[in-house]
Image 1 (cartoon, one colour):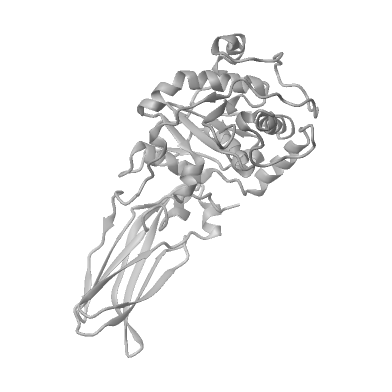
Image 2 (tube, rainbow, N blue to C red):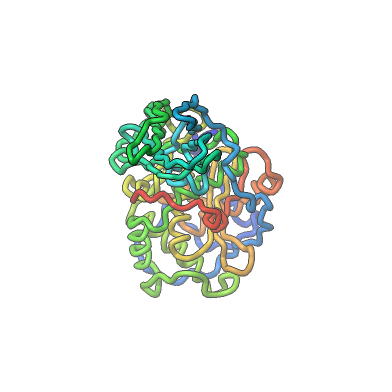
Length: 401
């Protein structure tokens, strides 16, 4: 997958506004740039909410077990043989998923050819980057045992990982003889620890859709910065509050569109967000540098995937459902209007700070009209990623902030 939206011609936004009627959307009076802060009148349900036959590709979830692994040499002491496999790289933005959604980072196998069981201690650590993972297991007589370990990155390591680094993975296996450890295996192998911001759009052994799902880990609804954004957005709501969940079928009362508009106004006026393309990365392969939603708010800017992940974080925090629409070179968000029907608003988040929320809906709908065929056909570089489905399968948020 290439870098999302490397160039930004503003998508011919002004021209599109003039063509709003051609995509079947109603619109109020357009303003450019957006008006200044005013807690204003209620938003009516947007005519741009449309039914979506959710693509069948939204259902499969990656097992991750097919991804290739490196294999160590084995060692034998006193009829006990140990060896291990490991990942050649630790993908930092996905580090919290190893051992749950992703396969274990280190898998140690132990064979005991003795006529009595043995107690074995296994440990693994990436020197200078992780805590030490340690397990004690009993291997049956003439039996074997597999130990899966996931040494966890330390907070200090994460904070300093602004570029990728080669590192040493150290694995030891000992068995207890009369209560004293006796070393069976002690090996060090190289692995690559990636940058905290480099997200890989292509991982060996994954299908494109499986890979796309993993970006949901960078949607962070519990980030205090996201929660603060919601608080600021409440000031733009006619009620002065911010409700959660769905309150009517097909957003009949306009509560969903109102909240989405409130967030848009807060992002544009209080946070002064704007689109800035920042595709550069020095990682190998098809990685892209992506900042977390809190970092986007801190920097008052984001590229298309970053701004989309921020909006998805707010939507999820408010108890609503979002999907990411990924197309060649670009990403935007779809927000479900209720919890009963597959009807969605589409929002072009890169127009933040440049136009009104209504215009962003108009443009989002026009994009979906153009992109829906490629998404439904499963064409290369197209994808519909349902956040709730990904969460149910174990793709939980990055726990850094």
